[in-house]
Length: 195
Length: 254
Image 1: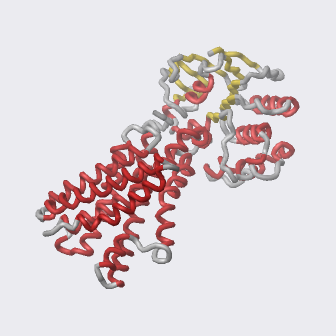
Image 2 (image 1 turned 60 degrees about the vertical axis):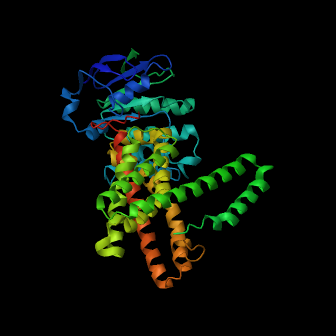
Image 3 (image 1 turned 90 degrees about the horizontal axis):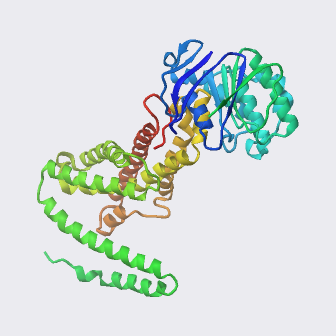
């Protein structure tokens, strides 16, 4: 279970929530309310303070910060990549960071989605989001924080990803989503949190 | 001693002609050229008066105080040139200059002046040349790093959220800044002797020094400047990078 008690964001808002494995939480709120701040704070990418921040009854302080971040993966709205990197290089980046070698098999099931030639720079925004989301899902994190990750995708791709994400959550993972799209997740427990 | 200020007049006339020529087309530029020429003339004359007094003393303390004054000015220049505001940038540039440039200046002076290495007449010109030549490299390197951080911090956040350490997540910006800072120096070293003869060597040749001696001294100076620049940028970048993160590892752009 992910437990957040009195997480104080940089904009002064205080967040309290609990999410169980296998659940999806939609974060809602007006523009500038602090949705992205919340996700970044949860992944401990930016400063915040809290009374309790724990996962599976283990306080965040038990984990070195890099390990906490590899449990909780945050995907920013803009897809960031090195100017000349190819799709394959982009997919490989996190695994090379962690020095994993046999990562290519991870993308085999979604070959139809990753099978794009050329450099990331030449892809459309929707294609980039597709690749970025697949890369985030392929990591062995327990919690995925998606920040407007579907904005540029077409309807069909979006539906395909909702199904993939549903399967991913069924493995006992937790998904927090900031999105302006109404997302229908089959047979899964979803809830809403308003900032 | 007779000071031959009058010998400057052809040069002053040359600059004044440039001013007159460009005044109609680019008044602002012409004024800036005139102002810069005036400043350089006055500053160098004042420097000569100051140095004359300083050179009368052979104390290491005097040399160090003047070196510190020069280093403070160099750090001040880095702040003035910087468009991005970073807390402690003055101290960061000061420390990086002292750690990178001072030991090189000391070693260089020991090499060419042996036992008299601490004398102001030996050490200060070397310190001045090293500080002056590394200044723009450090400035360019820091500017590149800070601009990348302000404008593209999502790239860093992405790598951090993939489990990257601070070093791993910032290595692209770090190396780009190092390269940006040292590239003018590399270009200058490549063109050395083919396109340009630097001021120090030209001065020696004009005063009829042996060409080999002049060129060996110039080689030492170029290699020292290169080492000083890269070290100074590296140290400054490490401090600036540290200032962007909390001790607990969160990105904290102030």
